[in-house]
Length: 321
Image 1: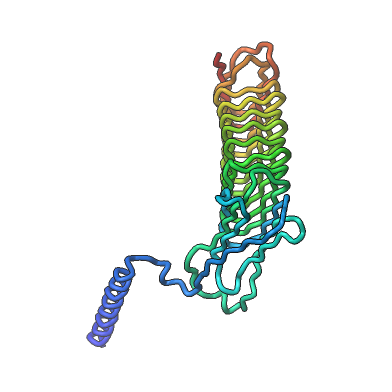
Image 2 (image 1 turned 90 degrees about the horizontal axis):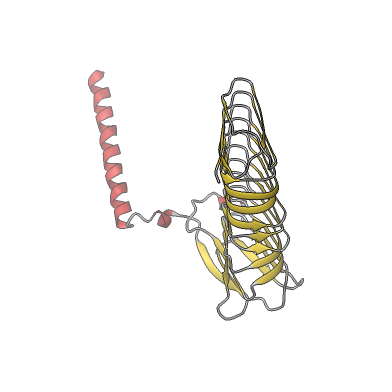
């Protein structure tokens, strides 16, 4: 009996080795291009609807969305899309509308994915009205060559990279995806993520900046605005070279809060176990309230108010000229 079991195990092991060798040989013949294994194939379609438009409305699912300047001054939308999940592109209503329409049966969605789907929008002008963009898992990339009256974006796992500015407000919401804003000029920012990271840099916002996250980190670099409000759970908050003409407010549970050469007339930070560290530019009336945390603050003076509250977090703030 033992000999029979041993033979069966050796035979099984031999089959596993042979199968592994065949798989490696097949992958080698494909030059390890795993996209060739996909059962859901894509096709590239180009849409060139005629007509003027001001607002832009985009609703996609898994496709990445990329904006680029048009080389010939005409609107062109190039879609890499799956069969049965094409896009409708229209300017009939006076708005540019791009919408994914999935006509596949449930069993047609069970295949293995192949090439990444995408929607590339070649725009003839530099300035537009309201941009409304909804996506699930597709990433978004909008360069600095465009400007909108307002921007409203939402996604699930989408990474959003926005460098285009807006005359009015910019509102972005995502779950596990990251939000990256660079070189913006806008009236206000309202940003929300769950586990994704929020990053704003080299931007001038004439009004308020609000950012909320759960475990994702929030960081501002070279930011000028009226006021900043940050709220996280376990994520850290970083203010590097941030100047707010009215106030900076940050609330976290276990996340740390760090300042680097930043300032505002009114600063308020509240944490549970997170530490508050860094450098400010001007003297303040410093107020510290902590249960067991260590406190190291400059001497109070004119220049505004800085109140720090924590349960067990440490405070270590200094001034730089």
